[in-house]
Structure formats: structure tokens, C-alpha cells
Image (cartoon, rainbow over all chains, first blue to last red):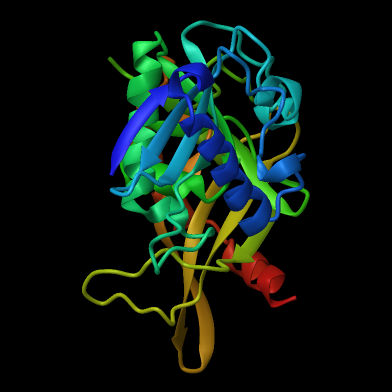
Length: 184
Length: 125
């Protein structure tokens, strides 16, 4: 497995594979109600300045992805889920980046399922890759909106993280906001 | 009243925290457990999560995992792993005790907090 990162332009054809992978994970497997025409899952936060972190298996197939957005521009948590911030104003700082659309489901592995993907080695490597990538862009902290299950990954793998507020049920899914320390 | 810090933490002393009432928010059974591994891993164990909050906004949020143990035909829930929260305990001078000590104190507190009845009742519905 290898991990690459970059904007949609710099990732060339890989970006389309990521959008198709996101459709497979979030729409087809997890049942999220997302706008996804043509089998590609994309939204208004997939912009030219968005940074993607992508895990690919030995055959070059996408087996994990994450999306990084600076909080100095509109981002998922500030525009769609500010209620997860426990009454706080959404951060706006070049030192805080948002991590979203995190998935680590390897469709070529027989033991994978969307609900336990967060305990996999791919998930840990991908999250560390996202932290390293964000650090290179000047981030000191990540903020995320995630399924509650990702908190287990954060705790069990030893990442420095804490929740920003209570979880909420949205469209039948428990989600929460958390802050992850990027470090030096 | 709890005050939210810019880093998302609610800071207060353990003594102040003990004065607050924590109320049940959600509980559920894990639909698909993480892959079991290691000596003693038992794929038939029933596991789940429970979430508790303080009143008002900003709210203190604490959640932890549990598993069912049975003795003499009676189901009992025990807390597993480490709890997640937005709490940072401070000392009497307002200095952070740190995430590790805060979590350790929360685990001790959980041993005195009666969460099992409400959680068991919710997941049994």
C-alpha cells in the first residue's frame, strides 16, 4: 500500500477514482444520502484548493481516502454541521484544517465491512498520512466531522484527540466533531 | 455554568464536575464489532456504546464502550476501553491536569456512576 496526496489537478486520473471510491463507500455501503450523479460522490467542498490523501493497494486500486480543507474558507463543519460544535463559532485559522470524507475500506480484502473499517491498518496509516500532509500545509490541529466509530480508532491507535461536543443523530447516523492534534 | 475553551475543551475541577448531573443521551449495540484478535478474544461477546451529557450548552459529553458479562443468569454491563470526552480537568489553580490524568479520573468516576440500568433499559427496548 502507498499513500499519496495532492489537489484534484495534481492527482490527475486518481481524483476520479477517489470520487468513485467515495460513492462506493458512502452511498452504496453506508447508505448516506449524498448527491452523487454518474457514480461519483462530490460536493461543493471538492474545490481546486481541496487536498486529498489517498491510500492505494499494490494493484493501484484506491483503498482509502481523506479530504483536507483549510478552515479559512467554507468547510463541511462550518456550513453544514455547526451544531456539532457545542455552541462554539466554527474555527477560521490557517493552523486548523478540516478532515472529512475519511474512508478506509479495502474492497479487495475479504474481511472488510464498512462498519469496522475504522479498526484497520489502512485507517491508521491513512489518518497518519492525513496528519502529516496537513502539517506540511501549516496545520497544528485537525477538526473533523465523523461517524462516532472513528473515535475508537483515534483512542485505540493513540492519536491525541478529543471531542468538540456531544454526538448527534443525523439521518439515522451518529456523528460527532473532534479535534486532533497535529504536533510538530 | 460550564465554559467552552477555544480548543473545544470544557475546563473545570473534578470537584465541580462531581456536582453536575449527567443524563443519558444514546446507547446502542455494536452492529459490527471490530475484528477480534489476541488471546481471549471472543467474537460472541455483546458490545456497545453509551453517551451521556450535562444539561445546557455548552454540554459536557462523555461516551464509552461496554460489554455484557453474565453471572448467575443475570446480564451485567462493564465499561471497556477508555472514555471519550470534551473534558479537561484542572487543578485548584486552573492548570490543566492533561488528557491522560483527566481520562484516568473519568474511569475512576465511572466506577461510581450508575449508568448500567439506563443503558441496559435502552438497548433492551
